[in-house]
Length: 283
Ligand code: GUN
Image (cartoon, rainbow, N blue to C red; front, side, top):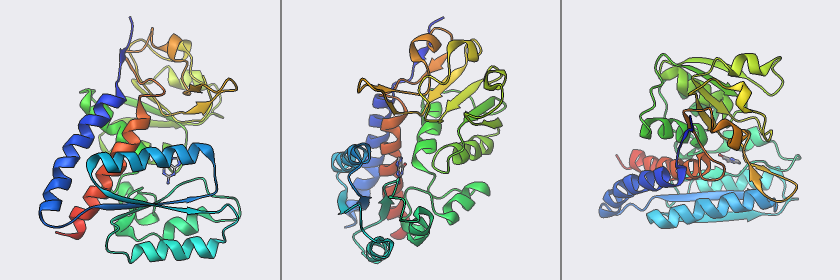
């Protein structure tokens, strides 16, 4: 059997169009949703992600601005920038691109973002809201994965979902969102003993471990839904996910490619959260 390929580019486009209608309704009322991105240093991957985020905002007609700060900026200056954006009425969403340089405490910066503008969904309050099932701004990548599953009509309730990866941005919120939809959820990491013994049980396997080709065909069951969140730059300059796509696609029921799977959805959900933030503030 060859898997159905989940087209994240097409689904992200549909999601952006859906949210554009909501942004247009706000504009009629004189409200232009605005996103501010703070980026520190010149990590090429981060710069590319930020460019793509800004491009998506333009496509949907949102206001967006980038605040570039040098690598040696002090924590105090980043905090001041965030506070300025917190009180800027043109800005409804604030995203501080991660990772930050080591001398800056990322948690401290994230906690400084106003809860109402935390469109990345990484503030303790918003993560807490996810735990209690009252999500406000779900973190964009797991939100995008849930949206892919919904668009493909893939049932979640009662399914055994296994998440490989325990990051605050993807793995942990992903597990909570699947649990909220009544999946039976297991969390593994790249360090899990005999990972294969676990992954073979998965009806839905979500991989966000940052290890190229961690998951091979012999590690999944026939017909499984395989969602690859990994984006790894290989030595030859090409991009690869955490899943051996060529092998696994022959055995899975559904699979996301890299690139063109989860990546575009992360950006579409950032647009969605920014418009949602503007709606909430103008209710
Ligand atoms: N770096 C990689 N992914 C993300 C993300 O979703 N949010 C932020 N803030 N930084 C990231």
